[in-house]
Image 1 (cartoon, rainbow, N blue to C red):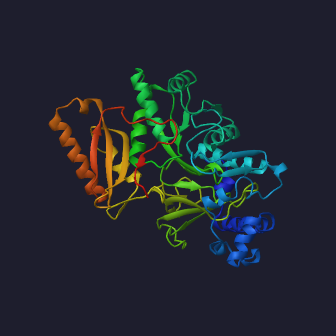
Image 2: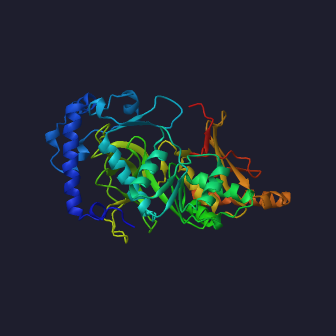
Image 3: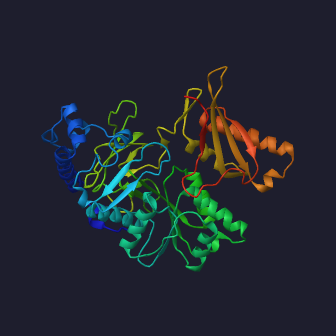
Length: 434
């Protein structure tokens, strides 16, 4: 289902003209109203009048998470404070938080982006959406809430955690769509089975999952566990929250709401713009944002832009599902590996659970990074003979070597011994003293 055909199916030429008009307006606004950006532009020798085409966006300076922290709390505000109606902050537990401030129009755009996102998963006003993203300063819960209300569907604002109650509400209220992190969706299915409930018997037909990178094999695992279609969604607090991009029924790439957020791909090492189809770091400019607009924000997320026409009828470009983040990248004996690659290879192996932990340490003698992969064996596998356990361990190590080109030391652990998460799953523990 397409929520807003006029904007989502706009003629490409008309969309590019709209994007340029909004970019031009944004550049003039931040140069006039945000001292931080005026200095950035001046230092780069750029004036608003230098932006004469959409391609001139490449002339503009980047914005980074450090910039957001350095300007905490209101240094990026582009409107008087009395126009701000809501504040959200990053969910990070260390360092100064990053702030996102919203005007009334920003809130409307956010709800619009999430209405499109939920509609992409088939949501209509006749649905009941069980929202298991966290509410509060984290954007996931309230962003989904606003989008559900814009559609006119029923929202159950259960928030994250309290899994038994989640399952009870899902059953009793016949929730048709649910939203949470992909790792929590798997955990909920696991808990349901322990309670003697088959998740496939629920009324749910679709789920919108995001807030952490996940693999195609994890999608298959979720879909099999729940008998649903699992849709990837994308957003981040710094930009607005969820609703920036989403999958349609084709489930190949996430449509970017390009009339609201302008995407670019750059080489993360040099900052050079890359063409559509080439993998690099996603950069986003908030072309309609009023409260805390951002110019060329470096998301650190690795993906590429899919420019080919989508069969769903939307004309907006798509981004491929995330490969990982530049700051999550592991370099193991000179080989670049993202945790999502390990997950993708691991879930395809019979006899293991989709729960794992990557321990990174540095050998004090060789000064080389060493990685140990902890993998949960399923109940049947853990009760097998020692020789079978050893055979499985060797098989996992061989698979990782074949798929990733690097040797990982594998440690098989008991079922349910790796801590579960109700929010973003913690997959990597880095013990290196860097």
